[in-house]
Image (cartoon, rainbow, N blue to C red):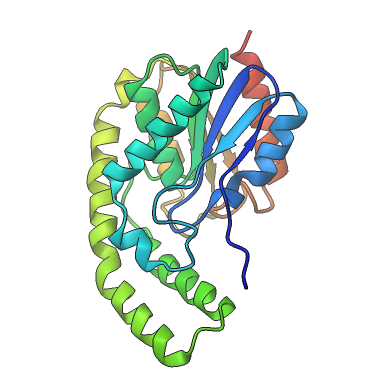
Length: 247
């Protein structure tokens, strides 16, 4: 029996941070970062977006959409408010960064936030479809699924994932159109060797947010900055950003 990933909450001090995971992934994306933050007495919550973490990638396409994920993020913010945090900040990686940005646009009470490897103002030259299929296949193989069932499931996913990606792209365009409304300090991280989205995505986002208290960091690394070779530097940079803007 394969243990399935779970949302997690590290309760410590009164400064709350929400961390959102990537598309077709789970809160383990942000666990290393969360551990560093909890050592500094931040309370960290990493929710699971609907459809994720079930062991069947079909659920991401059938049981979820951007509107449902908006509700997930809103519930996460409400959870941290119920925990009586003095402040709440929100960050995310990839898809999670798009929703963190949406939350900052919608909720001026959030203290600060940002996005790591998120294609908010760039939807060209990306390989999300291919990556999704690779991740699904690897997960089904870990489950020791029969070849016939795996072939059938992968064929269905291949036919249907683009509908969900189109819905995400539409939502992302809406978020991009409202970037100027962000008043909070905003942290941008981008890998220069990103293999899934355009490596210029972070730079383009920073250009749109010039004059909006945005901080841009590039790393000589691929897409998943919270778990790859860049994660230590990302953690240091983000912690410095939090301290600078939490005085």
